[in-house]
Image 1 (cartoon, rainbow, N blue to C red):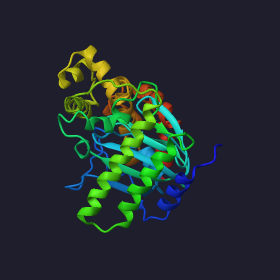
Image 2 (cartoon, rainbow, N blue to C red):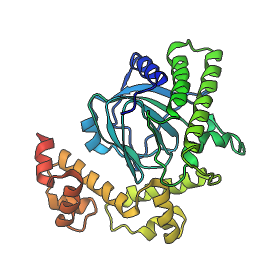
Image 3 (cartoon, rainbow, N blue to C red):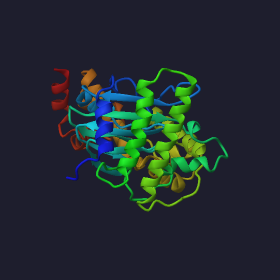
Image 4 (cartoon, one colour):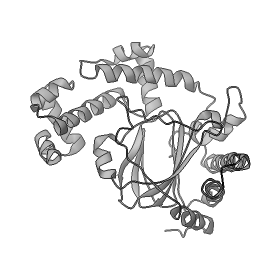
Amino acid sequence: MKKLSASTLDLLSFLTAQPHEVFDMAGRIDSRRYMARRFPEGLPLIISHQQYPGYRRMVWENWMHWHDYYECFIALSGRGDFRAGHDCFTFAPGDMVLVDPLKIHGVMQMEAAHTALVILFPTQLVSQPGATVDQGFLSPWDRRMTGVLPLLKASQAEAPAVHQAALALAQTWFSSPDTEDRRLALKMHFLTLLFRLRQAFARTGAADQGSVDRNQREERLRRALDHISIHAHEPLTQPAVARAAGMSTSRFREFFKTTTGWGFAQYLREIRVERAAKMLRETNESVANVAHMTGFADQSHLLRCFKAKYAAAPLSYRKKHQS
């Protein structure tokens, strides 16, 4: 394993000494898997040092989610397995993960010691409509070439410059009083971080894929997921959801997979299985009734899907979690 650079070690040392937030997923994700955030006015930026002591419970409740704002995090301690759309990879201390807006994502598994510096921001912090130059700051998220993972390993040659920019941002965030000069310094260091990320990912061969009408994509995705949330327990078809999104079935199929990283059938199956798991934990309904009430063709169909996701039969799962 390559030795970590001095700037990486300085960043990890500083961040681990900062106050932390105990983060819990419970109650934060709605029926569409959307996680809302309220950003401060003036400088819509959130930075936090997070710990996850209850992560095992959070995973089985419903970890996978999406949002319309940008996110990146730097692992400070502990390793984990992350999934974003169809990309799956392992992160370790010092690695930076970029979370694409609208992609369904989440940590699939992580060590109990895992902590991270999490940075969240909406588009308007960086780029206003029509500001084509500013959109370049978001290229590591928006213009990554297909096949390039949203991961900057601590061992990569570009990592020290990124970590140096992240350290300047973190020092200002955690150490300075809240003044106008602090907010200006935060914006400056934040844009420097984005610029360093742009340089890092440009060297992996990222290509400019052109600007995307993100507002239209978000609106179509919300309409589709709203419809799925309401009708998941029914014999729901992809053409019906496509009509709700205002698209043809063929266009919707590609749109849904490209935007979220999941196929429509996979997403619907996961929603149904998770609702079935919730009923098994919280009610005494028979497995046959649970299958019927969550949209499965029959009890056998639920059994196959449930075992594939939870590696346990429904009754064994109920016994474990109700006890």
